[in-house]
Length: 605
Image (cartoon, helix red, strand yellow):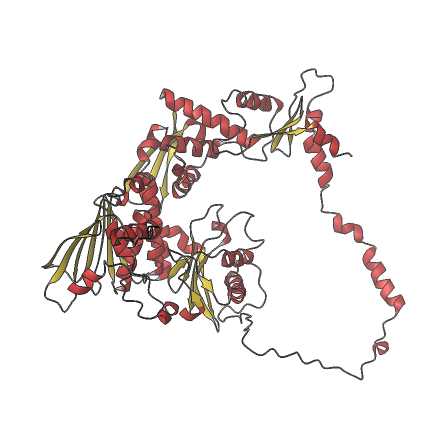
């Protein structure tokens, strides 16, 4: 029988590694910038074209590389961070596995110019698809300058599955944010299509947060700081008023490495319990400093999931630290918080010997000498019970209110009126009506969303979307990252009824809105558009106009809690069933649900 197992060529092995390490242009930027940080750079410049598909350039003023190191850096598993197995458990630098440059060179045309300070000349290397094209000595600045051209040029299938430029740019910006926040002592500059979009000077962490997310956040975050036996925690958390349903201002770091940790997120959310609305998420920028031998970072290809030796203990510390910060700055009612000091955070060390608590007993105590009597106790309890009804004096009858809301159509329409509506509202949220098979329930907000969406799409097809001009223009400040995203859809926004201009960096002015949005705060509309762009809604193969139609319909739809007149309900239902797809919103949420008569009967069995 013939042998069937073969050793893969380096070029193929590198392409396989690239599939794990280099998923998109943002992955390249992450790896190269982390290398610059490890090289001690104080200034890093990133340039991209076509969202990184055509060009990615990362240059720094770090230590640079020798001629030999420059060539070795592109070999697989070549790294300066690990020399023995034990080193895996004491890593404090960013990149360490030695796969990144080899993977990038396997799927792109890569040029490197690098020089060490003590060298008179530098080194130029060109590698394309893992093949060395050229290597020579050149004159260049101290540091390293990587140029990545035509990513995935030799893997057409991978390149084809890259998303639209706006989506890929969104991923790049998020990677940029993660790295820039963790390294406030480094200056960063980002160029997009030959235009400088972001310049961040070296400064404090709070200033870096403000530079990235806008000046308004600076007055809405408070510091968090806690020092314990196993780790130190520092950073900033957001005040409850800036909590959002979908919040991208959430960053955990361990030893300056970005991480995701659902368990620690629960600890943080529990500290905000009862001070932010349900399903809202607070902003946070939290850093852990911990000994490297107490964590394991080599469990995930992108190293964003990290194991901790004492996860429950850190949960307690983090929750207490957040509560302390909220209490210290009078964000929540607090007891005995010293504004200038720190509270002792409880921590159980499993390595210490457990000592039983000492119990002292007063052998001379006689409970019958206290003077209490059964009659006295009864009298006190009786006095308390005499006013029990006052406990409920401020409460409304919820059940009565519910019945009133469910059957308010009977009160509004006299029994003698023959034109009684077949529809009625429940809690000003659902519309109910009997049908042959049972009881139909309609979500009124989603129904209105569907109506507005189809109306918007029809108007776009006819090219007749009206714009309602505002009496007073609205100027909105947007942070640098979101400004870049929003500008990618400016033309489409204008085509669907937005009269929008950008006359200065990080500010836009709204002069007019699509007609059905004229009663809505322009800032809310813009925030919803940015959120959708951030969350890659257009990954679902929606074009930009369709995405805008969905956002506008969701923003302009009826809010829950609005009481509708019978005529308004009839018109809403008539318009809903005139839609091409009345059962679901455009993003798949259910609008109509029917409770069968059999199910209703079973409720009474």
